[in-house]
Length: 225
Image (cartoon, rainbow, N blue to C red):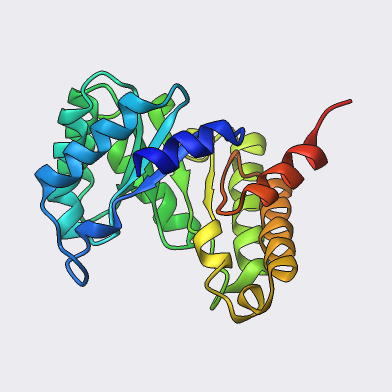
């Protein structure tokens, strides 16, 4: 992970996204201490912002993410996913150690606002990022796009503080799981690139990408001349 993080920095990434997949109970199920040690190594090895996500299992993340927050005390990382099942445990740990929270809710604007309201009872709104999920399958692109767009519109039009946080689109992993993206490299790059641009237009502020060529494509496309 440390070498990959450095490589991402060399390739021009604006931030590094570290997913602690080894902590997944359905997989290797590595310990919280192991994950925290690795997270600290990566954080100390790079000079750009670091985003850290747990496995997505809310119970295991409630063990892992507080340890990660403690190990990286004061480094001002973006850590998640903070979910309705673990927001108090994880949120308070992030606050105590000077980090930001990525609040995850499943493609539903009411659940999104509900989680943010609960989190904001003790966590600063300006340190929260919204993760509304970015589905490549199931709900599909149209639903993901519409939801992000609506979140932004509500924030701007009604001045709803619970929808005015930045949005993170965790799309890279989902894109490369699809059959179409796996058929050949060019198709995969187009799949990820088109998804990224679509969600960017919908209002996403942070894009999680997998392929460096997609990164170059997005940077060129959005470059202000």
